[in-house]
Amino acid sequence: MNRIQDLSKFIKLTGDRAKLDAKANGTYIVYKTREGEFVKESSNGEVERMNEQDLPHE
Image 1 (spheres, rainbow, N blue to C red):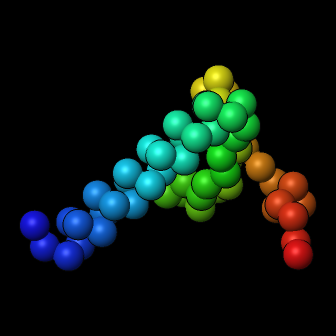
Image 2: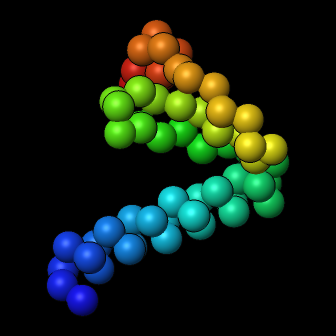
């Protein structure tokens, strides 16, 4: 495999692991879609779009 493929696989595995951890702890993950929207995905599979004002600004 080349570096791009390796990196893509690593990113996918990291996301899959985050989903497993969220399910085990009854929490959620937040990520940005390809369309540029932020979404919050609960451990039960429910997906909610987030507005810019929903994001914490620290």
